Amino acid sequence: MDDTIKLTSINVVLGLIAGVLSGMFTVGFLGFKNDMIGLLLGIIFIYATLKVADNIVESELDNSQKLWDCVLPFFFVWIIVWILLANYL
Image (cartoon, rainbow, N blue to C red):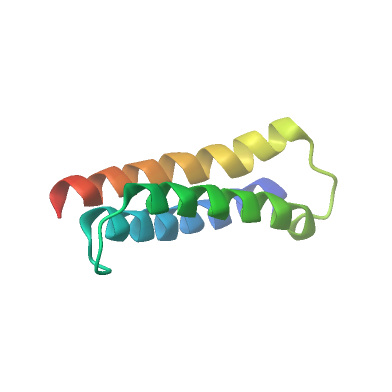
């Protein structure tokens, strides 16, 4: 499988998970409401993904490839899911 497809797919799934967790903290499903914990979860997820991305691919990644294949897919999915859950739950 191509490295771009692997990185993008993993980051979309992790963005979905982080968005759901952030939405749960924003709405208060876990006992208390705190938007900052939702933000910190997203930052921790993206930091961990960038560290693991070098181990997933066979070739060396430059910063622009990490931005386009890791950060942006994660960020867009995370923000969309978080906003939808915060507004509609």
